[in-house]
Image (cartoon, rainbow, N blue to C red; front, side, top):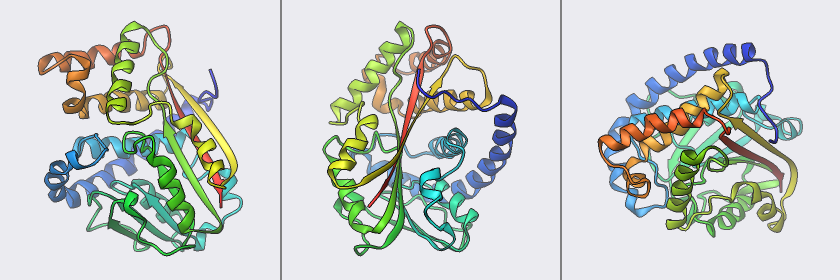
Length: 309
């Protein structure tokens, strides 16, 4: 079943409780400063491939996702990169940063670094953020607005419903351009639900079809290393992780909540494909959450690549 989450449940609970305090604090700042941008962002959904919504519930989910991934991978930066890069004076870019949760977390940890975040939507925190964090709105696929050889580290993650299958190479090529010689890329993406009972598999198949309808590849995540090699990146590490929803630890429950929230928040995009509308969709979500925890176990995998220019 791959690499399972193996840390003691008690340690995860302590980490989760500590991170929940950060989630609540950061969400308050993000929501206060970003709400004015949400209506404009929603009106632009039809012009981009990314198909998750833009309300505060989704900002909550993105923050929860960040801290869950941080616990899953035991930190924000892979050991292979952290052991080679002095983050105290690094210049860092986060591509598709959303509300900037990863960026602000790392910037707080390394106040001597210079951190930049870009996203096609301006939902960045306005009032409270580390002084070494800078945001700008742009479409990365039209070119990163930075000179060649600018960054020591570029982070890009969880864009599996944002990029079409032929856009991954374009994006990684552009990142290669702005990385300094010897600079690092950290990429973390997930798959759709891969196993589970009949109800879970029917739901996963419908989700995958929604991706295909948008020219996205639901199986792209494990193959990103091959794309990177073709673009002359040196692969330093590949870290697959598998979450089994049959487990009952705190971290698994966080990922379970995230999976259900993805389907909840993306209802306008998914309800026709899933075959549920209105109250039926609410009942579907309740059923889906219960079925995910039954045998045969349903699993959700994550794939982190660390690479160097």
